[in-house]
Image 1 (cartoon, rainbow, N blue to C red):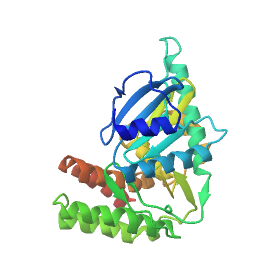
Image 2: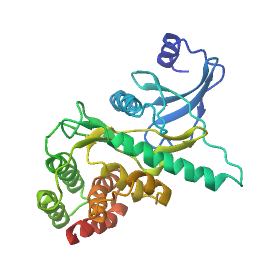
Image 3: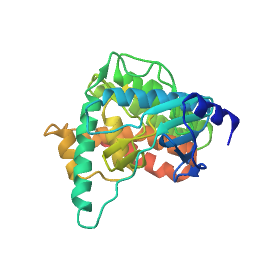
Image 4: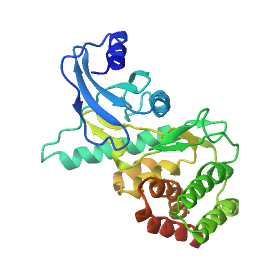
Length: 289
């Protein structure tokens, strides 16, 4: 075991009772479960700046969701390349109750996200930059959400993808045109606290309800999280009923496409040209209104 990890465990009064056991996932960081005499923990190893941002995000989510049915793992400690968190146990379903319990979990997820997004900050952004996957995420705050989406999300990612030969000038120009015209149709809105990277793999269904992991937290439009959830999956009707509570915005399809552009551009930058078609399709949906 790494000497720095051993020292961190000692400072936290955690006594290992077994070896590190790798967990599934971990596309960006190494993740493992460690049994200790004080209970099971999750150990994550990655770039120290990314982990510091993740620890801060987990703490922000946990504080915002106090009393909510939506859980967030407790941060035990973070130092250098190591982050230690409480371990959450995946839900175990028998065949009879699996569908009912999944529906209950989806309802709790919707209610919890509504609570999270009800927490608003004075400006769009975050006090520090963090990362979405491997990509540095600039969060310098702006009062107007349209300007934040344009200057901190769409234009920087479009430029980075163009510089890496992943977007031609025509497609980059279309993206920048959409970014410049946000004020034509998207109302400004309060800056809601968002998870920031809420694809289905970062929602964990546990024995005690749904939980959020691996955040890239900042404050922005709540559709950031909803659009990410629908990008690589389809949340159930129970989730949307609980979240919208009868108040779905009429322009949701266009907002969904808009807020899918940033994660799609990020995937294009990280994983290559196979995501270019998805970027074009989302862009066309925004342009069509």
